Length: 403
Ligand SMILES: [Zn+2]
Image 1 (tube, rainbow, N blue to C red):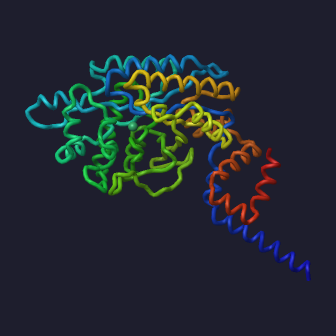
Image 2: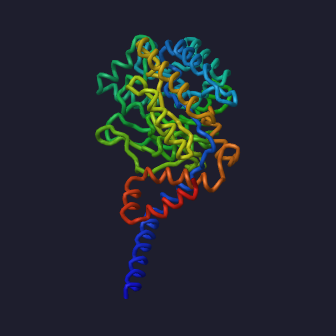
């Protein structure tokens, strides 16, 4: 009698665990399929550089010097990707013109020579890696339309000197939607296609190669944008681990909340990579925040892609120096903690995943299990249920075996 009871309890217990695994099967298999890196990798993903204030030139030089002060054991410098904005409103020309039309000034204009020289220097030294952020950090017709009702935008279009896209209302900094009024509206596929042709052509003219990696401004983009980029040579899109496609009635980015993992594919077979944390010293982020992210992502077998922006390094000189010092400290500490730390570019990671390069991506079962357990450990609801149902026991045993 007791044996029958015990047998029934065991079967019920196993059944509950099987149901839990079944319910979470998609997420669990996705985390298993996500590539696992052999080494800790640290990359700074930096946005908004290019057509903008000329002070960028010497701030880029200062960044280059910090990055060149560090090397991994293979002799590579740390890489800071540069999300490039190719042009901005020529507000002075627009004010001088008789009719109110949008006029752009591009990064290849002689006015930006110093900025471009600093960018080229870092690219040649291997500390900067350019990525396409956009022709503009906004959709020009939308900014023009918004200026009719929004005084802040109208004032921005009359900036004396070169304006900064950061000063636009946040909703207008999304390039691939019409957010003149909210909720935002989609742009047509034809408009998107034509704009992508234009931006890819200008990027190629300035940097000598087509863009391989694109970073959507404010992470708002659509299938149509992916298709257009893929059609013109972009093979990788940097994401925040999800996709936003519009702005809601409050101007907040809004999407379908799906989770995007490294190596997953989108329209036109573009590969997604994921930025997994922020390093914005001007917002109070210290080196420790970057080190915590590096520890977590290394345990998860992922590269650590830290998002940062030019605003940390522009403006107030004292604050900019603090930002540089924190960057320097983060690199020093990271090298001290991880002897196998590798400095690679985001493109290196994308290419290694695409070619299943086993010098960087592991195929060892135990290493993969450890990374998978670290990943699913972050699924708090699943983990709570695993505790409740006792599934934690076989998972723990699996971890012990893999350790
Ligand atoms: Zn940006």
